[in-house]
Amino acid sequence: MTQPLLQIKNATKVYGGGFLKTGPTTVALQDFNLTIDAKPATITTIAGESGSGKTTLANLVLGFVNLTSGQILYKGNDTGSMDRNQTMEYRREVQAVFQDPYAVYNPFYRVKHIFDLVINNFKMANNKKDARDLIEKALNVVGMRGEEVLEKYPHQLSGGQRQRMMVARAYLLKPRLIVADEPVSMVDASLRAMILDIMLRLRDEEGISFLYITHDLSTAYQIGDRIYLLYQGATAERGDTMQVIENPKHPYVQLLINSIPVPDPKVRWGGDMEATSVDDEQMRVNIKSGCRFYPRCPARMDKCLTAQPPLYVVGKGRHEAACYLYDDHPVTEESAREQVAG
Image 1 (spheres, rainbow, N blue to C red):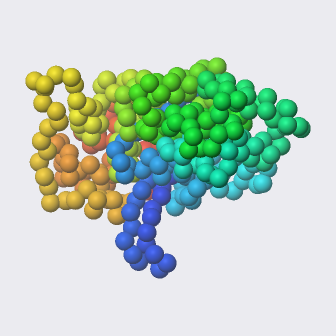
Image 2 (image 1 turned 45 degrees about the horizontal axis):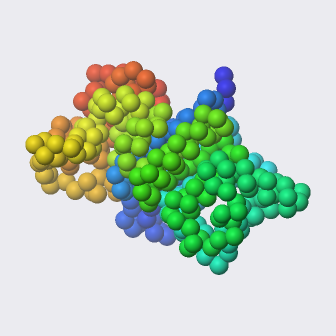
Image 3 (image 1 turned 135 degrees about the horizontal axis):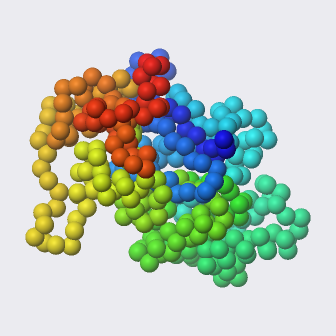
């Protein structure tokens, strides 16, 4: 059996508590599981509203923050206990593209500086000519030319140019995985389509997988192979992207998709939800809290407050939802293991 490229096992991140662990806490991510196969390359979407844990997940994968519990494995190696050579390989093969490209640039340096840093740090070229050839090839992939942009300062480029430059910088290292955190949310519609097309080409032609972080279900539907919908740090639903978006099973995902406005003034946008005395933020202070969506759920039951529901198999294509509405369905293997361990 081929070793997965990336495995995330029961990843949990809790913020707060203070030095003595007695202060208030927030569960940013709870018992999250994900597997990205080595081949074929795929685009895995992590979607959800603001505060759902998407960026926390990206930061954990990139090593910017540490897990409270759980594991992240790259090619079978725990990222938390890699040696120096394994860490360098991981840093080279797992790259990032961020939401705000301007924040990544040092405004005092010309644009070519970000490429020079990569080439020097990873010793990718023996001379300036070889280095320039590598940079030019990377820029060509995103539809740019070095003579037009490399000698400029970041403020002299448009937002779309800066974002494509960051994709080129990531591609320069020929990574196996790119973590793209809201890469198209700050560019206009035409450039959004261009960047999404670049992602598809890198997947299909270069064999690069993506962990695509977004709140935009329309772009997820366009390019995603598999999707994970997060709510308040927990997985609400996951599966093949088309299956999940066209046939949502979790009440939160159903409301999320139904909230997308249609171009018809006769169709009412959104719906009413009965309020409860339970604040959804209260559900997030402890990993033993019940279903995070209970305060807003139109189908809530008393048992939803007892424990976070496991993932149930609700359809084909590994379509799974964490909701007690489906407690007569089979539980996924990992949920079954968690129940035994608990």
